[in-house]
Length: 236
Ligand SMILES: [Zn+2]
Image (cartoon, rainbow, N blue to C red; front, side):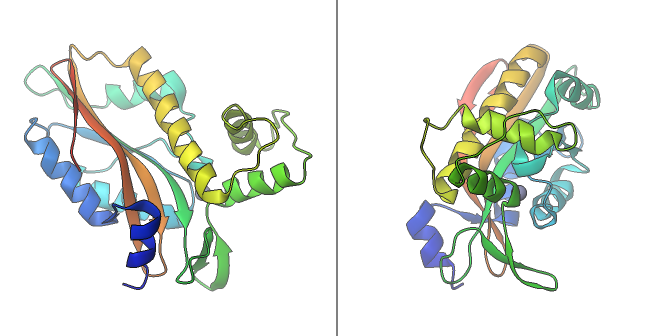
């Protein structure tokens, strides 16, 4: 695995995507979560190379509710969240929800961040939505108008600008980390407003999805379960 030393240096811990999802499933078993009694959701970029994680989640938990949007921003809001939790199995008087939320970045064998190959394309980029935003930021001419013909990208730009000090242009990796923070905050904000921890248990797994030259990885960030109303950090 040519990418391994690079990932270790950049991120420290990382897992192959399937291994991460399997670990998350196994760790939740001790809190009573199973395929039969829980519903999963995924919030990741729309990018087709990001969808592998949805396949792994499906294998563990069944078909997952899709919160995805450009760059993985959580934009489904209270209505999306209410729909998701209303689809959860009700077993033993309880509902169980699992949230996976990731930003993403590509990296090639020469450590070029943001660079990947795609079917029939020798050179492409991920996350394209973040690269576009960075280009606009570098040009010092950024439009923050809510463009009805480009809703997701304009919401993404507005939301990220709130997190970046005025005049600063982060590199792509820093922006990917900022995006993860934003996804997590926005998801948790809506969970807090909609989810009732008295009648449900839920778990949140966050991280960065990394597209290596051969396969995808997950760099884990915060993971926790809210079980019987109490938040507990999960080691993963
Ligand atoms: Zn993307």
